[in-house]
Image (cartoon, rainbow, N blue to C red; front, side):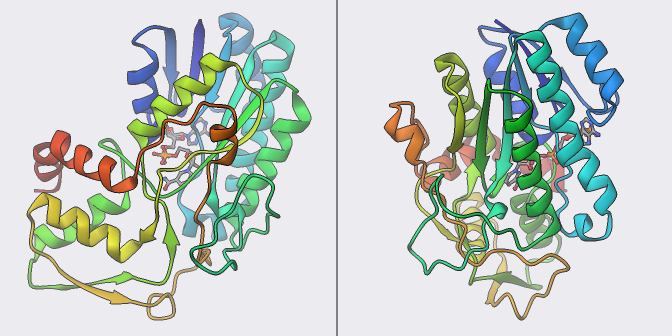
Length: 291
Ligand SMILES: NC(=O)c1ccc[n+]([C@@H]2O[C@H](COP(=O)([O-])OP(=O)(O)OC[C@H]3O[C@@H](n4cnc5c(N)ncnc54)[C@H](OP(=O)(O)O)[C@@H]3O)[C@@H](O)[C@H]2O)c1
């Protein structure tokens, strides 16, 4: 199978390349090789390569910046996926697209969760643009698979865990305020990449939730991560109100991977199991990176 990964230089894209290239023919490209918002460039590359699957891991992921750079967010998160899905249809390729928990408003009380049939209602421009991207993909082709994930971290690229580590290593005495009233499911990009491989091989269509099992707050996540890393850090729990951000985040974005389970495809693990394995594999790499 020939697979084109867009956003191949990102956190998830790199793990997807690693996992899929074990037994598939994979081409992974970043924005300098293919700008997905450039319709002509997309048509040219896909027409040339004729991949069986286009896996779109590209996105404008800086949630707060999306509030002030709406045009760019739309180009990357809506026009880009639409271009890819349109080219996929013309080529007979399957379009696999990654979306987010931020399509929900998070008003359900914890521990209630969101399934694929729950009503969407984003509270940020990022969430809105990702939701419009989902719709654009579904309109452009029938052969699409959309996976909504959440709270991604991995060895490559920027993420919340690396920020926590950098702050704690930089000054172990300094208080680090971490939000303790937003709930979600931290998801290791490598575990998600393995789930994506399973979905691609099963050739299934439609919308799927794909996060690690279980849930916690950002504070819980930071605490367990630093504990596993054996790095002291003066973490202090705070509320969303104490830590205002330009984009409003959902208080509860716990997703249930219902369709993956119904289809017998579910391989996501508990977030704590993944976090322990992540630290075991990348502890030295992470420390080296922040020092
Ligand atoms: N990060 C999270 O916590 C999170 C949570 C839920 C869902 N998601 C979704 O998961 C997916 C992967 O996220 P991630 O964390 O791996 O993202 P990331 O590390 O920020 O990587 C983003 C990727 O998008 C590429 N890109 C940006 N603009 C592009 C353009 N115009 N054309 C082509 N490529 C472009 C970047 O390429 P260059 O670096 O080469 O410019 C990079 O490879 C995204 O769909 C995101 O919305 C992420």
